[in-house]
Image (cartoon, one colour):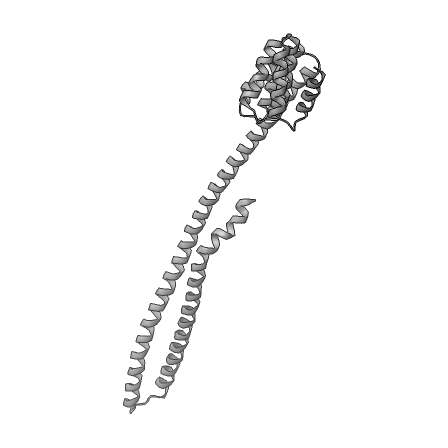
Length: 251
C-alpha cells in the first residue's frame, strides 16, 4: 500500500523533464511538417514550370535552377530536423527505461524496509504477549495459594523480562509470597529490594508495610514501628501510609 502511494510521487519529478522533451518534439514535428509542405509546394511549382517551358524558356530554366537549389537547402534542413527529432525520441525512450528501472529498485527497497518494520512490530507484539502471560501466570499461582510456584514464576519473569515495567511488582509479590509462607526474613529481604531499587514505584510503600508486618511477626516491634514511621514520612499520601498511621495509633 505504501509503495503504491509513493510510485506517482517518485515518478512525477523525473517525468517532468520528459514532458518538456515531448513538447519540444511536438514543436519539431510541426516544423518538419511545415517544411515538408513547403517542399511539396515547391515541387509542384517546378512541375508546373516544366510543363510550361518551351524551346525559348532560358529564363525559366534559370528560375528552375534557383528553385532546385532552394529545394536542396530545404531538404538538408528537413533532414537535420528529422535527425534531431529522432534523437529526442531515442533519448526519451532511454530516459523512461532508466526511470522505471530506478523506480523498481526504489520500490523494492521500500518494500524490504516495510517488511522489516512489520517483522519488528510482530516480534514486539509477541514479546508483549509473552511478558503479560508470564506475569499473570505467576500471579494466578499466588492467588491459588501455590506460593512457591508463584515465587519461581516471578523470579523467572524478572530474568526473562528484565526491562519490563512490571519487574518491581513481580519483586513485591515474591515478598508477599514469602510472607504468606511465614518465611518472614526472606519476605523482608525481598521487600527491601523493592524499596531500595525502585523507591519511586507505587509498590514501594506497600513493600514497607509488608516489611513492618514481617518484623512484627518476628517480634521486632521497635523495628516495625520505625518502619511504619518511615513509610508515613516518605509516602504520606499513599494508602499504605494510612494503614501505617492506624497501626501506630493502636500501639
